[in-house]
Image (tube, rainbow, N blue to C red; front, side):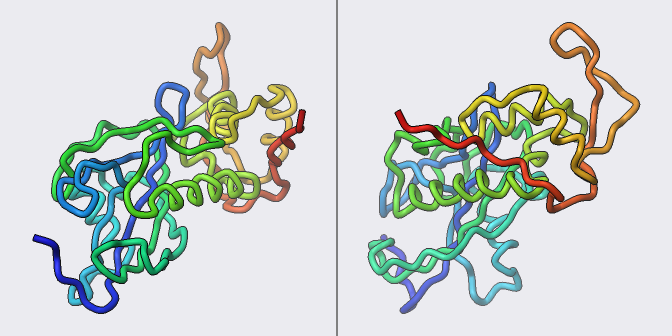
Length: 235
């Protein structure tokens, strides 16, 4: 039976991204109930107006219920609101979308309104090939574009890395998120010149046959000098 909604309902949806096997992935669920039963969608659900949760807490609850993933493992930030008249066939639903990022996130464990949950590869230029329910393809596209822009001017790229990482690890994040290759020497020189971006540890890891210094994310949130995405040259 379809759920009866108030005149305007509020929902939360999450575009959760991680890097697995040198590819960007998004967390998707298979809907167990109509509408769009059997279709892939972003995890999410309705905001309960009579609960004591705020929107971010509601997003964390839905994420845990549908995928088993704990929001505390993520960098989570609000992306925007989606309010097209026809975005939900059940009635007028405004969704507040979030972007979540994390390193080495585990396999999901479906529950709640999700029949299955899984990681799906994301093309940095085209999103995912599978059709998504509601307007979730647009939310994912917007979330990916937000991350691609934001890592130019903030330390957000390090949210894809573990607590300690090499400069090569960080460069690969930029390359995977942007879908392009970067000059190794120029990238190293650039990131080491930015105040507060990285903090060197006294640990090393063998990387490409020789020891590589391990770093931690520094205190800087906004980079004093941007790391700009290479311009796409037209043919």
